[in-house]
Length: 316
Length: 253
Image (cartoon, rainbow over all chains, first blue to last red; front, side):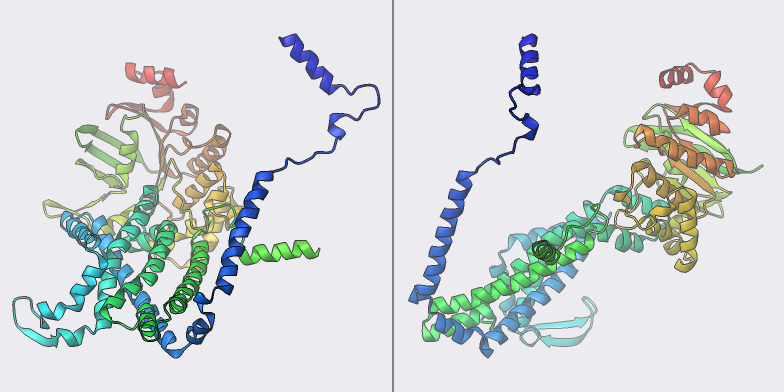
């Protein structure tokens, strides 16, 4: 066995005497991938059919779409949607940070309370919770500030305090906080314990340990999930339409209720949701890049840098 | 001469497991103490309890006469607040087995962080000193590089510079070369030897017997949570009195 393999190895290594070139001098023909090309053709055909349909099918009613896409009503509705998202995100993550800190604290009482909060708000469907807040005045007509069980200083009528918008923000933020808390907690526990230990050994103050050492490293895993939540909240604001708040989806419904052009108006909302989500995704990319310092030997290029390099390669 | 580190009757348990069963140890200023012992013998726990990273169950630890973690008022010992403990720790340098450099900060930022935030020194004053320290441990050209871009040996040398930046009274090393590739061990040991020659007070947990023989003033052998034997290297390493010490050294050599 060993002798045969030896002779065959010699056969290929030694060039035959008759002037035929050696293996090392031969040109290499790359392997063909016919099935990949079939796949490309099928997908391109389907895409072309879809685009063709978008353009030619009168049902999409593009004139109506463009008529409404940039109207003032839609812009003010979009603004309400953005406000709901911003308030929901800021309040949700702020409260989420508090709940996460409570769950990570060494006080069993605070841990249980935080766990209970997350349990409750993850259990109640958002739409049910929103309807509760919308009807809060039915349960409590008045709210007041004062000493618990003691004298009261200020009274509010619940209906005045929570406009529908306030109730919506409150509902979204409380719901968001439960999820944000888990995301933040997940980020914090993903940081190696050695980091806090080293910080403690160096005598770095507690707050600074958290904000300078732990949090920047936790951000790496908080960000992708956090961005997911912001985007999902942004689209989730459409659920608020049940409270008759004039956000994007509600407004679109109102308009097609009047002119019964359902599809083009749904497309108006859809395209705006896509535009805003795209902006958020781009922001996410750059923020994540910022927090990736020190995690890899060198950061991957941004898409813009990639395009520039490609262009430089083409023009050279 | 007063002891720089004074450990008296220290006990420590993790749950059911008693790791330290009454340890007494004195480390004089300017001397190097090397702690040897099989894994699980409690040597790392002892080192970590010196700067109160591990809170002991019984016994007291003094550094330069100062009680670690407690304050005596009248005839009672009061537990110190977190802030006060952190302040005490900033007088003790600690070098970890796994370096534990801050991954999102450059080498220089790693060294500058503690003097600025724990000792409230000015950044502008600390930075030149930090560069000097990096130079001294032989990574002066790596100041603006992140830890992951460094080899293990370079990372550990940055970690030593970081510990030195606090101008500590005592330096503690927890198996500083155990996570390194064999060819990188030498460069880290050289830095530690240099520090020993400069008269730093050091306590080193290690498995490098040759290194212990070279730099230790005192070698301490720990097994089963107690100090079995201690003394100058030639005594403990070459003529151990106890059977357990002899067995351990013959295994490691």
